[in-house]
Image (cartoon, rainbow, N blue to C red; front, side, top):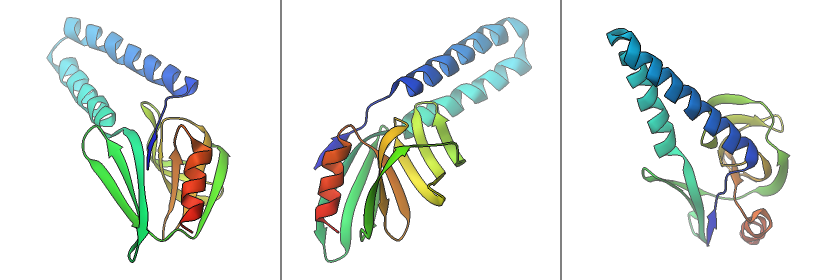
Amino acid sequence: MKFELDFDESTKKITATGLLLLATFGVYCLKSGYRETLLFTFLALAVMLLFLMMPTSVEVENSSADGNLIKVNRILGSTRIRCRVKEVEMVEKLDRGLLIGTAGLFGWYGVFIVNGETALVYSRKRRDLVMLKAERNYVFGVRDSEGFLSVLNRQT
């Protein structure tokens, strides 16, 4: 079953602000010189990579002998997670706890500390998330959190 990921207002504001700052810096660099233009090019490529790695949807396939298959679709490829679901719970809000990844620019994805535990986060929003506990912890910010939760609960 496929679940879409939507941007929330905070992600839209952070992304718009970040892109505006990058564009402003780009105009400055074009007028300044070679060294600044190299720095701008590096920053623009890094932002483009973040955009390409942004999660767009999550698919859950029925359980099999090897466990459940969860596919996180991105603009550039996808990530397949095969796991045996131990527990599923709702996470009200993703607080500050970023270890590595992005916190707001094109979404919230990377390694975060969620409810005192390390988790891989795939989300475009900061609230109403679903935490899946397996061999590793995963947090997903899908549009239909309740539906996603019920599909995962059927597989535990």
